[in-house]
Amino acid sequence: MASLSITPAQIRAGRGLLKWTQAVLAARAAVSVVTLNMIESDQVAPRTRTLAAIQAALEREGVRFIGDAAEGYGVLLRPAPDAAVRTG
Image 1 (tube, rainbow, N blue to C red):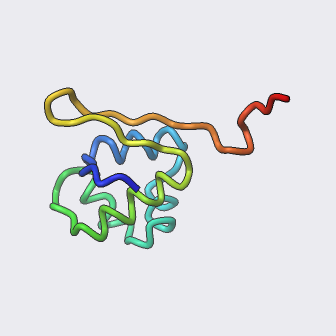
Image 2: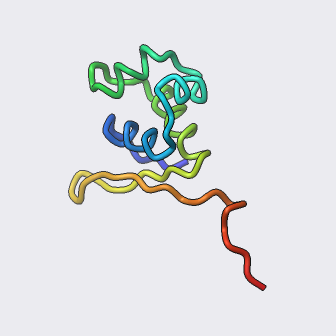
Image 3: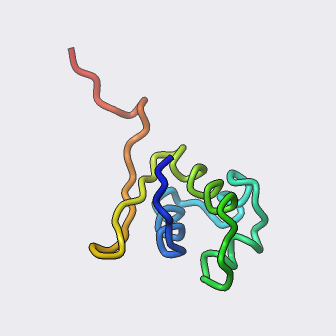
């Protein structure tokens, strides 16, 4: 897992790429839906371990967080290893 500090918008975007509801991400990250909702709507500064759990849950499914304050932030979705085209 990268040490990048992810933004609420990146969490929403990553969840959207996976077509996950807040309930699904909350369960996968072992946080409450209320907590996730507050983080995504930028109503609370999340604890480091909570943010790390959310980031890890998304990254396990192929979401990658990119960017920085100077260049901007974003997300991308890598295909699952079993979906990769094999050659040879």
